[in-house]
Image 1 (cartoon, rainbow, N blue to C red):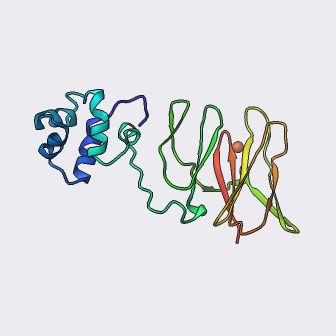
Image 2: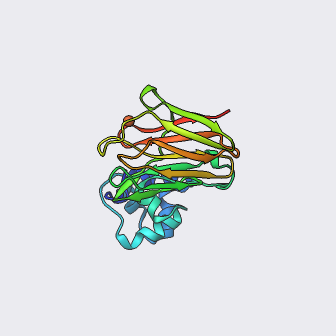
Image 3: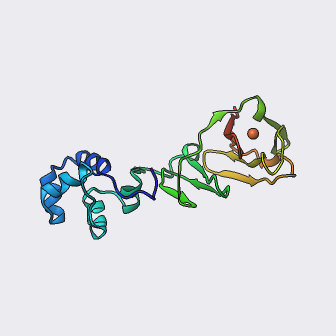
Length: 197
Ligand SMILES: [Fe+2]
C-alpha cells in the first residue's frame, strides 16, 4: 500500500468492523446514506476528499493511516529501545528511527520497518571490545554500488548510529554501555543483526 493510492473500500470495511460499527452507524456519523458506505466498501465509488477527515476520525485513525491502509497502535512507545524500528528509504538512503510503529513516507514510498535478520556470511559483523568501546566492523565491499551505509548499536535506552560512506571503512566505534545488539545496513542486501550477550 502507498500514498499514491486513495483510501480503499477494503480499508474502510476493515476499520469499520474493527470499531464494531454497522454501515448505517458509520453513515450517520458522516451524514451520508448507508448505501453510500456500501458503495465505497465494494469499490463502486470513493468518498469525496472533504469526507476524508470525518471518515478518519469516525474510524479512529489519522488520515495518513486511512490512506496508507496501515494502522498504528502505540501503547507505550518509550518502553524499550530494543523494540524500536529503523526505516530506510530505498531511493535516498535516509534512515529514520522510530520508538514505536509509524507510517513513514520518504520519496513518496511507504517505508516498512527494516527486518532484522541474523548476519549472513557476506555480512558477518565482527565485534571487538576495546576498553569501554566496541569496535565493530563488517568485512564487506564499500563501492558506490554496494556498501554498508550505516552501523548502529542498540541498548535498552539508547541507539548509537554511525553513517558510513562508499570508499570509507565499514567500521565504527560505540560506547559499550548496555549495548545488546549491533545492526548493519547494506544498501543492497538490507539489515543484519548481531546480538551481544
Ligand atoms: Fe551486501
